[in-house]
Image (cartoon, rainbow, N blue to C red; front, side, top):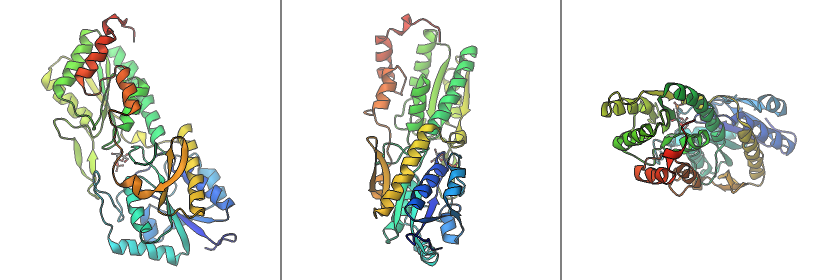
Amino acid sequence: MNSTKTGKTIGIVNSGGDCAGINTVIASAVVAGCRMGYEFVGFELGWEGLIDRKYRPLNIEVAGQIQNLGGTVLHTTNRGRFAAKVGQNQTNQIDPSILDACQHSIEDLGIDGLLVIGGDGTLSGALQLAERGVNIVGIPKSIDNDLYATDHTFGFASAVQVAVDAIDRIQTTAFSHNRIFLVECMGRNAGWLSLYAGLAAGADAILLPEFPTSLDDIVEFLRYRRDRHRNSTIIVVSEAFEIEGKAVTQGASLTNEVIFAGISNELIRRLEDMAPHEFEMRNVVLGHTQRGGSPCAEDRILSKRFGTHAMEAYHQGHFGYMVALQNAHIRPVPIKDAVNQLKLVTRQNNIYEAARRTGIFLGDLEDYLSIAVADDMTNIPYSV
Ligand code: F6P
């Protein structure tokens, strides 16, 4: 497996949930790296492929074929033996025998080091390998955008776009039927996806896991709109939003990760109990549509920047680092700075503030009413 130029072969591992842009990252890293004299292999099914030594060669020709494809040609799993995160902010020490197996594969296959594409869980695992001296550069992937130390992860913009396109469509049918729609977005414990999608689409309410609100306040918000002849309402709700302190889940995955699902349905049930026959409500769960499909233009560009900078960081020996987007620049940052805690929405965030100022209900009824009344909503003609 020796290359002719540097004599170094880099292994690429992508792990965790897929998203749009993984193939773009792989392709751009391979193209940039081949020009620097490296060769590449891609491990199949995330860390599983590294442990079981299942891999395929990656070259410039493959890169050209995959660069705009959604998903990952290497396949992936978030249920493997290498799971380092369980739930929010709980890091697992990976079984030393699994870490040993990874190191043995790397040595026996003559791999110089790894580019690891992943989110919080994957990079927490990568850090444990890096701490054993494995040459690793991380690349931040997630539709949830919940990694610290980077302004954005790749995959996020495409997922936002999917949600916006869906909400645009839901808006016209909601309007026609004078209905309330609850649109359930992924994102786990971080509300970024819902916040960005809701703001971009012009939703009327965005319910985030970071800002609990009471059912009473949601009913009051709906009545306030109805009394002003806003007969259709779009509520974007994050999958991990809690009703009276409880999330709606479908049990746990094989690696004990909570599977969120059903909050929009449950909210309808609870709101109907509180205000029987007052509102006609429907729900849409966007689910994995947000992970599927080709990357949008913004994600293609970010993925190519991440992929090429990751090769640069590797070449310069920034091991144990992750490439990050910070103030429009890509920089290497220590992986540990990205995975110690989740990046959550705060009230100080300027996207949150824009949503608030455009009159979106974000869970704080008093604040919402103060802005709505100041805008003198009753004088806005009922047209849209
Ligand atoms: O972390 C990405 C993500 O898509 C979350 O937003 C979602 O909760 C989860 O993965 C779904 O995971 P799975 O594909 O295992 O159902």
